[in-house]
Image 1 (cartoon, rainbow, N blue to C red):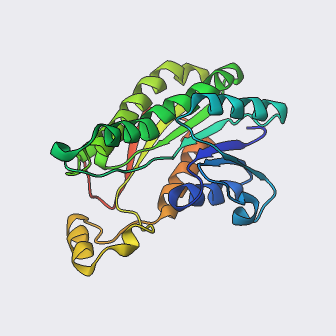
Image 2 (cartoon, rainbow, N blue to C red):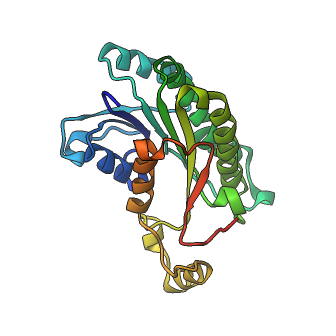
Image 3 (cartoon, rainbow, N blue to C red):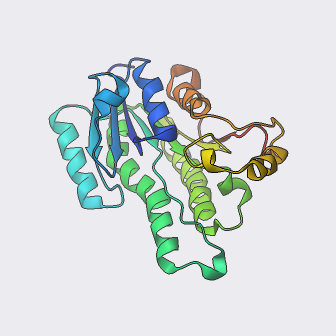
Amino acid sequence: MDNKIVFITGISRGIGLEIAKQFINNGYFVIGTSRSKLDLNTMLESDDCLHFPLDITDRASVSKCLDQLKKIDKLPNVLINNAGITKDQLFLRMKDDEWDDVINSNLTSAFNITKLFIKFMVKKRFGRIINISSVAGLMGNPGQVNYSASKAGLGGFTRALAKEVAVRNITVNCIAPGFIETDMTNNFSEDELKNIFNQIPANKMGNSRDVADLALFLASPKGNYITGQTISVDGGLYMS
């Protein structure tokens, strides 16, 4: 593959940032987005990267991003839809905006960004699309009807699109992380952690590197014959 360029949404921290680090260490030019401004060159210790402060639910802003990438000849051949939010609430108390915001940020945004680049991948007859989902989309989670629905939707999005574009040498896959060590999980109490570990056969949380390594594999020639799949990275939490 010539000109290895990856576009990653939600790059500011956690899984998104770790994915960026692994890709840049493997010869990719990294383009990342987040809602806020950040110094991606310093964070990745490289000049082979570019950051866009972008609201990926805003289609007008997304379109402007494409125009800028065309000007500098940096259209990606690998796309990672990682950005997402949670607004947890029991369904009976869930407000309309808590549903709408999560669906728009987690699912509709993947449509917006993928629609932006897919035609160029089809024209080049090459592409790798990786959607970061969650085991919540596979097994459900109380208090997360909105989040679980958005992540389950990503799975359907992945399978349908994979069937449409496989003949053009474009793979579309989904990674479903389980409990991953993040800023949020660092605040869990001992009792909460014990309850979590009791649910995981591996008896431990994963880390962002576990997800990033799989994303790198799926983007590489070694993942050439894998498409339409949702692969869990969860220590055995969910087994189908």
